[in-house]
Image (tube, one colour):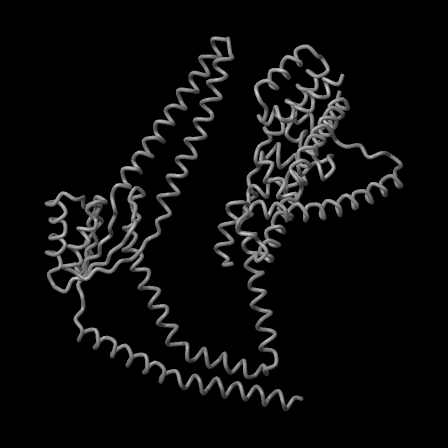
Length: 172
Length: 336
């Protein structure tokens, strides 16, 4: 595929892909890295792209895998850091929830709650409830049946609700 | 208890609007009676609201440029690998000589390229006319070459023809400083374009040049998108107005609605204008003095002569550079 053709596809989908990455990671720098990685992977494997399906759907499915890899590495690093902290100071790591609330930015509050979700549920809730994509598109991106998408979405919503309530209680 | 579970299972469909009337009523009735389900329902609706209210984030600065750079480097890497595989077996010296030769031979061409670029600049200054007015939509461009010294008469003929037959309008005329060419912008009713072109073809040499058609369509799409957004907002406000009982609040909402209707009208006007514009075909006509055959031959012959002379001038440089190259090589061998 010609570079210009590819650029047109990128322009159409980059904002959405970047937003998905941001909601997955909660960090603009990481989101930039991951989403660009996904586009580069897409460019390398452009011959595998089925032209009947949407380009954004395809890139999202690539993004999903890169994001999972990335998050796995990051969490393992975090755990190591936490271990070190615990060994050194024997104090528990306290998240700065209070600060967030003082900023009164509920969007950050919700975003942090999303980050606590397990990846399986996180991706599905971002795609459906934030980006409001259709169930069919989501089942293509995640390579799941419609039934699993729906049931997983329901469970994810339940878990997220619990997380939000817990965080609210902590604040009060 | 069983009923509560059943009802809760239907909540998701309720919020997706994938539910029939009976089920909807059933849920609403049940919620009014059962506290725990009501609580669950409210929590879920709050959650979905706050999720869908999360704003879309703008791309960070330079995101697109960065990304395209990285992708471009990728494709360049492919080219580099290809060359590494194929060319490494040759000796470096051969490569250097080849490069020098290319440089020396390329020199006259290089000048030519610079000249061409300058010409292009001139041309683009002239053809800026096509896009001076953003309302002007150039769909097709026609070059009209005329074999006569008195071209001013010709372009008057064209404009007269248009006004007499009442098939369109001359929107702008530009004449070059030295009176060697004129540029006309003409809009012709779509039904009459064939006739007009036939007349042009009969009398003059007409060459067709396509100009991209995308600008117009995109503009129209943008307008329509904005219109949709405004209508959505309007509906939201209208609903709010129905619900609210406070008079002050109502006044404020009315204000907002007034602003929206103004915006709507403007957009609709613009869309209508574009639709009107679409009824016309737009032509960009260059009326130029054509060169005779003999003059043309003379000029090309002169050019060939000039260029060959330049190559002769460059031969000493070539000899000198080759000498320097061999001297360096000898110098290296001695030191080894």
